Length: 622
Image (cartoon, rainbow, N blue to C red; front, side):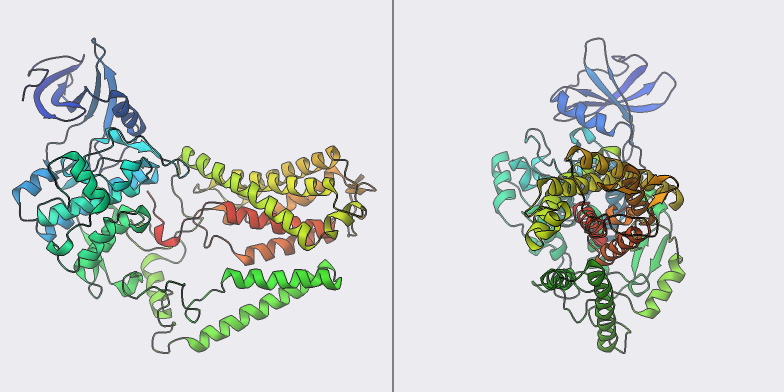
């Protein structure tokens, strides 16, 4: 194999080539020294330069112990592009597999996995998919696993998962959906599944005489899992599912389940500390499954309908929706006031919660302190967990099943924040339209009476829907900017106060633009702030709108409504508390009582339902 440049060549100013290393589909790699004596790897791009440069530029400023660092991209005098990278002298995973053609020992397989998981997870957390995971791109030096060749890496937002199918990986490790041009981080899960299969057997699951034949096998044939140890077969089989939705949610989950299958459910799990994952060498902390309450998704069968109601600690959301729907519809049919609805709703909710908690206590297993099959840990285990991790801020170890909440600090790229907000904003607009239509259908007098008209008033509908959309958008935009950051609650509330003032000003502007007239602004303890009135004969003033929305936004923890690490996608308790706050606020500072409560209910519901939510079992931090 003849390379373009011979030893001691200087095609790039400041670098001297010492020897050629590798030639691949994108170019040639050389070992070189800088003029200062530093060892580097130089990659000369020869094919698909645009694809390679795009991937490299996305990863240029990333730094992680388990990724090969990229220092710079330069052009020589001939216009050729060179990538300057960290030089790794260790063995590749491909060479390690070739040394043991019948399969690697399980201990050695597990030695590679933490670093692989950490490096790929770091990319995924930043919205980057590697797309070319294979043994030739994985190295180990001084017991540190490093992933290289990120030239095919691509930033893929949740709303933009399509990509060209040209030059998107090595055919032996290519996920089936790549051929369809629509994919996400699941392709890396699939590739890692192929790598694990090859490490254990010495052979890839799909082989053939041509590229087309191998691709067809990826698309249509099931892998032969009989050559794998029985306990490993379900794990590799799930990783190699044809449907991306059926695979593991991340490479970290795949590696975790692999370790659990190797060790067995009853054995203690060796969970690496962060330092171990970073350098793949050092002490490990052995924690029993009972102590950290590891949830075993394969330990008990899942019902196709859902969790058993006798073991679920929370009241299902449909029960709450049905309860309040019956209460609200009944109140309109009987002519009851909003105060009656709110008071009876709070009392009924308390009775519902109390009855559910009493039933849970009665049905609990006396031997364990929790219901059989429940995912909630027994009291004794929760105490051990708090002692091990601390009550308030447990150490965030990768692989540890600690509770990740909106207070958990984490790095979220601006591109991810923007993408999440854009998708949530579109959903919020649609939900607002649906809620507004529902209110008009269930209670047609709500919009008609508010304007003193005999039929639905377009101005009332426009004011209500427009203000709801603006409030939801501003609430999500503000909280998305502070998500994952270390911000004191006082500062958060100040920001939300200013956001509420902006919402109030926008609502007043809509009111004036639509020439909307109120028949009754309500009664309250305060009708003015000093000499400035909160309402006139035409309805709330600018100060009235600003006061209502500003205080409403500042007294509620809206970041718990929108954070992707919130306890649940939709919490009825948050909705009820927001409605109660709006009712109290409208009775203290004069504001249309019914509109204030319904506005609070719609905005709270829209914000919760539209905002991105990560299930607890899928949460990871960088």
